[in-house]
Length: 366
Image (cartoon, rainbow, N blue to C red; front, side, top):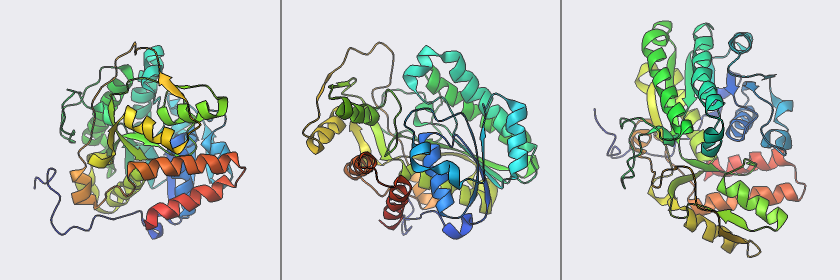
């Protein structure tokens, strides 16, 4: 039944991850030393899951992984490259996971212009290696592969993209993620269905939250500017993005994994996890709110952009609302406030494992 454009009447859209489902399950997470991977690993540990991580070393210093102390909570943690198939396959096999959540990637648009080969081999070949490792491991029952909202062929139109819209990508990052989507579809149809492994892809928007120190991202760049006293260099002020707190898509990934594991093939395929209309704002709107929150902030227009990035981008989340009973909880102003709150706690020397758990609890109960 076609329902992507209209949420079902009477559906209670407030579903959140089920702690009882995750307790004592073996979960394999790639990219656990990164920002989103670190948050989801911490959340899974809070719910009592046995989390096994596979990733490169933390990509920044400081890093969410180190500051929150995630390594001390994991069942195992392997430092490895997705392009190393023997090492990755061995890590998956030894972990004996039921569920795999694939987050590891080269995730920066501007970096993809500087290093296109690494971007394509990590995001495309790495996904092939992950799925190949899963089909060789008999314990694996479901896989969630995280891609991006930028996997769509962007036509700069005003209406949001749905899961059945055409894939594409101008820049190497976007193209590599569109290619990863095709890889997943091929593996699902050619191999995984016959192995009784159910796989879905998840496409999320521009994610913000405490503990992101990546380069070329608006919130981390803003927080660095506060530390240095140098003006924030703002580019593409009119670009509109689906901004959301990191806990929003992560709750979607976990909810999707639960449904995929329990009910199988009907939850396979692609899913959007975005903020809805209230989170689609231009860069200038976000910068103004940040400046209002921190009167000591300085910012100025940066140099004219020299690489192509989409101007308009938004996601239709009707499918997740209707079939997963999932919807975003925190508006953009709340998401910005929680990000600044986390950062201030970190600056003051607070216990960041505790602070992160506190924000997860606030989200789940909001």
